[in-house]
Every structure is written in structure tokens, then in C-alpha cells.
Length: 171
Image 1 (tube, rainbow, N blue to C red):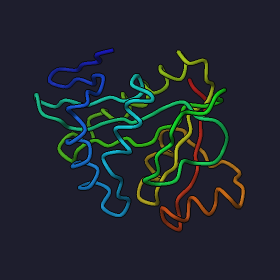
Image 2: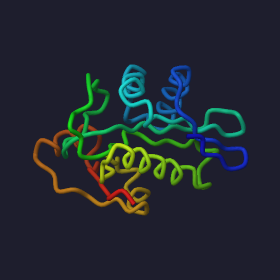
Image 3: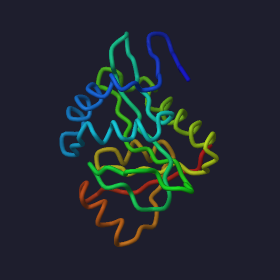
Image 4: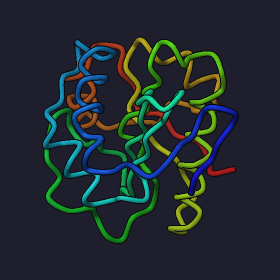
């Protein structure tokens, strides 16, 4: 599963990476805090959807993704217990590239890897919750807003007033 470009590699996340994930998440998403236990659970439930980005041998980002069903986002900082079955989509829980690695295509590679995981699971759609800060980025990646229920609107409001549930077909 290693995808490399020069001094960069996306690899399967290891439990030893979780401290780096939590630290980077807190630095990049201070308004959306999540406990290490959330990331550890996602890694345990969907190891093939959890990747670490290494830049010059240093931790430089991560992708947390997993199978999902329906149009209710997992609430922020909430344990799932298990993944829903049957699933109907692949959910990108979080994608972060450290500031020093941005603008070099690393996020697009991670999205492609999430698509590969969705394909392997036989799931036709990528879905995610976007905060107000990332809406333009996700729109450039082809994600569009879903029609949502009042229950989903309440979940999104716990992120921020402009948070949005977005999806796109697996390419």
C-alpha cells in the first residue's frame, strides 16, 4: 500500500503513530478537538483506511477513513463501537497534511487511496463532513453537498454553523 513520491510516502498507520495524529490534529483543528481514543478506535475498526504521511522521514499527515452507512455523520469526538453493516459508502473522517507538506498534492493522493479502499470494499461513494475552513478544498476535489435531515443538521452544527455533509462518486 506504500505510495511514494521522492521523499514522501503514505503508509498504513501504526498504533505508534497515534500520538503524532493527536498532536497534529490539535494543531491543525483546534476548534474540533478529538481524543486519541477516537483515532485509536478508527484504526482498530478500519486499519486499511488509516494512513500516515511521512515527509523526509518525519510524520507529516494522516488519513482516517472507514466504511459507513447513510447520511448521518459520526458526531465529533464520539466512539462508534463498531462499523455499520452493510455499508453503502466510504467515510473520510479526517485528512490532514501538516503545513510544511501542503500544496504538493499529498491530499489528492490520500483521496485516491480512500477511493481505492472504497473500491476494495465495493462501496460507490466517498462521504465526509467538511468544516467551514475546508469547504473550498473539498469542492475542488469534486465533493458536493448532500440533502440532509434535521438530525444531520444538528450533528453538523456541533462542528460549526457552516459545516456540510459532502459526497462524490468513487472515480
